[in-house]
Length: 393
Image (cartoon, rainbow, N blue to C red):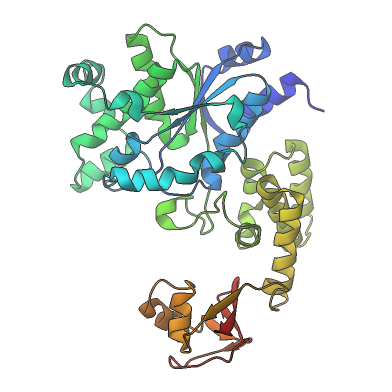
């Protein structure tokens, strides 16, 4: 059982990029202050992924220490778009898309946070009420040079790429969120540094004590680049156990310790021992299986982790069909129509591309014929993980 000080030291050292003000923050946490801890999440995608879960794991520990967690759902800022981590302009999203994306956000966040004890705020509540006078007053606190000196913005300007005035407004909006909830501490990714500092500036302007800041390192995705919904390289909190486990197993060996450190809450000492095992020549696959089980267990419990492991060993490694396969009953007889109607694919053209790429199997055999008619009872497989049992009505 870790002491309070050990938990605080872990929060302030693990997965950290930068902190303001570390000494003050540590004293306040040791003193048991019930800090108002803010995390803002824009629903630019329907899924929350493990990259976003890095600060969520810290929030979980801070909540257990007695802090008041305040989750700011960016239903307004989500339409504007933050380009802090982008090398091109992020398009505005419609209110309808944002509303659809955030449909299950609270349920996803509850995988790690005790939602009943957290405050949930939607920033449209205050941002949509601001007038030009108030926006102008806030904008006067910042210079264009401060914004354009940011690495990704400077790179775009140097290339002659468009940078919209809308993008200049985003840091102010995120900063004003901190004013409205009276944040003592804000968490965010390393790419959020400028936005989090804007919160301190605005809080000073409105007579509040400026928030402390804690930014975390950015987690790589399944392809080794920064995890991003835009790139499709994510492991999502709502991925089914078999998919979550399988995605972790697909990671490069060089990411094993990175994921143990940033995507699990195993003690650092235990992770150091795992690293020594890897360095001694232990098969990385065995260690990765341990990692996949640990991550899946966080979000789906021991039962879900075991389900993911069993599926991987039987279907992916053993190349066998799973014991339980959902039946799909239809009057369709051609494989193209079956694939579309079962929603294994989005369109007939997708179905043809998959067949051409050897991506569809019937009863374990790759098919090449667009006009193939499977028998009722056949098992249709898409890729490595998706199966249906075809039943003729």
